Length: 468
Image 1 (cartoon, rainbow, N blue to C red):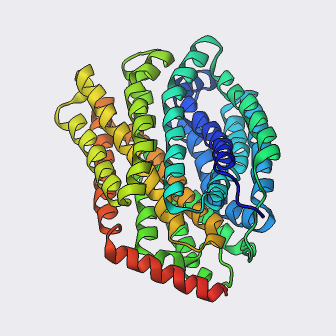
Image 2 (cartoon, rainbow, N blue to C red):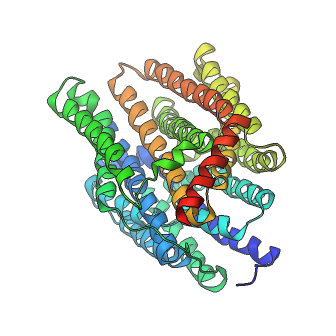
């Protein structure tokens, strides 16, 4: 097959970015709508956590499976199926009669969503084969995430205040239909030359691990740390993790190829993704409740308050892609960690909640830091691996993002539920966000130097030798 022209590659990138826009908009507008959903469906704090985490958990559990399916059956085919399922799930969410049904329909959305972003990234990786072009493309991809953060709170707030929270799910219908048509017309089909076999045991262990761990964290405030239910959840999660570590190396085509983690940059990118997205998930959940319930703002005004954070993400994401292309991943990772940690320290040390200028400064720092982190994570994860395994590598990294976001919502939501007042909950939550920023800084710096690059080269060479 002939190499696509640069203009055609940009068109494919734009189509793939539409899937990211759909998924990211859905997340940001839903956060703005949480207080309205809470009032109409009589939801508790844990109910709001499950509205978010039911989606991210299913997404995290299925991303690697979707990456493998895309490599085997065709990336465009799986991508199109994901668009159809995600759009159907959105329609069902808009019709949900109760919180339980909304959570269930969010899980349907997640099944479709698992076939979108990691598969789209795999398509981009196969279309943009030049490393510098790929880094710039990934930076543009990150810019779309920033765009969704900028538009999501405003669009979501406007819809919630005028048409009600159910209207936020209507956004996905025209976007999904347009992306489906354009994919059929312009996105080339591609498969891995030696696709991986499905790993049902590994898939089940991942579901048990993520589900039991998150359930335990969310339900701690209502049952207590030493309750049999919580202890049983954590014990089950530990057993599932041990099972993965023992079982996966024995398979020829494991769901999680543990050899990837011999590459220090890949391992670092995975941990940084968990830390950065835990901070994001916790930040969005905390500030939605703070602005609308503690300060009494409308959904639209709450969205306007967070616009500086979203705007900085929009600016920083493409800048990060250019920095990665020109100087490698270390500089943007260090800057990202510093900015995210500084936002948390400023929020706690100077009690930013009492001053709008300080609060806006916190939002700007956090948004800039988060905007810088995406491009080096994605580029590091897919660049050091054999091209045939792009779907699996992208799936693992995307899984780390969703795991992080689930944990961020679970942990900070539990802090809010267990605290006597919002002021105390806010301080504890911002310290957690600070810790996530420090983790991005330290781990990003440690796994992006010459030694780390050497481990990536050796790992890729060993894997390529095994495959041939």
